[in-house]
Length: 221
Ligand code: SAH
Ligand code: MG
Picture (cartoon, rainbow, N blue to C red):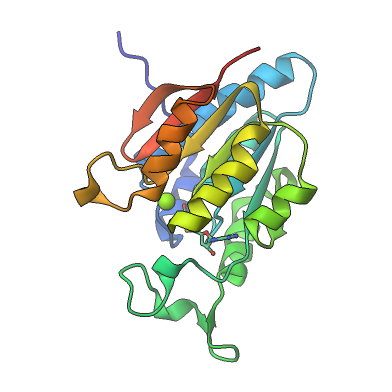
């Protein structure tokens, strides 16, 4: 028997996900939700508060899946983004969306879109929005968490900085999820794949794959 490793969103959230800009196919989103929920529940069973950090909020698409898992388990999700977009989102790149440019600053701004997603989701009790650079945020968010989801900038420097800043925040037995991991270079950029490989040599074990989403567990002590 194959167990489904996916947690479906309820209808109102699934509809919201459909109209939310972003880069999270629903099958991968449901996998995010499933593993997050499971890790939150382990912690809840021990009468503790489940916690997670997401790097790369954008307009809140993946946040809906993680936030729903948090709501179900009375847990908390911190979602981190400076909301200026990555290199991949700038003008002339395939992931550029000109509708997200603020005409006053001429800069990408996804924060107001995210706030809209959050307001419509009904998940705001379970989500803390952190607006800032991900490495800077790691200096103040220093507690271990059940789940870290890395989906920020995909340049070499940003991806590796996120790995070094965040992977070791995962509690022992907790979950590290990395998005846009492509073993074949023809399918996408290298850095997420490289940090995934590094995690495997550093006390993380692969648990599951859904599309380009890798689920790793940090070894228990
Ligand atoms: N998880 C989202 C997609 C994230 S896109 C979804 O499901 O749709 C990557 C995001 O990472 C962008 O919004 C960009 O602003 C953010 N980002 C890139 N580098 C960053 C950094 N150094 N600090 C904080 N956020 C960063
Ligand atoms: Mg991604």
